[in-house]
Image (cartoon, rainbow, N blue to C red):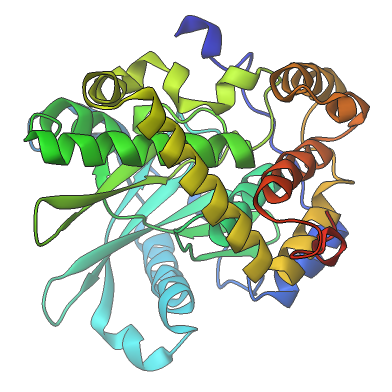
Length: 356
């Protein structure tokens, strides 16, 4: 819906010293063989179309021979760092097949297509500009969602693995016309995804910012929705921006819920996901505490947006503690704390142990 568009282009925030230390501690920061700025000196580009002849909004870029040789070697080494902790024995079988560039993303990403020369199998990864709020989003996804992510940081350069799946907009258009059993499972997964986004305050999850992973099961299929864009982690001030249900682009899945689910079943799925988040908090409490310690003192949005979101969440939760929050990190911590408090009694789960 129009009211849920970002108010302006997202600001990129620097990684402060505390977050750098966190990333170093948990193996996210490493020295890379090349930087984002090494990628911008391409000499030509052509529009990239999909198999149906449609514009993908990516461009395939080309470099002079000297730069190409240097870049291809560095990119293969980065892929080895991302996938095999830098095992050089794997490098001789790798080659760069294509480099694409997207001019519309906030982080201006380059997408690297790596091919295995032994069997022509290929994979992708991304080179982006570093943004602290995006890194917080990646870490919260890693710790409190069912999805695991691999990424690396070096200065102003962010490397992310490719998250495989069917793009959400394509899934809604071509894959929701299935039997009732699978439609119920799709609707259930969207409810759980919607709940995760709201608890973690990951915004702008319209259909082209997530993928759907489909796993054949004994009966029907299992579905998992995974965010692929973390630019809008805890940035905007509007509460509904963090609820995927309010984006018209998601109506195709939302309508499956209206068609097949009762209010009681929706409530059940919401409670299930909150319980799972609370248990993930318990499992990852030490690391989560260190992440939130960085986040609560970091400025990853404007004070106006912080106060707007605090006001709207105070009304939503009927909890005025949100009004006292001065950073998005404080709001995220309080939002998570509410989930944990509802799932565990104080005697069963010590809130202080996770810094909440």
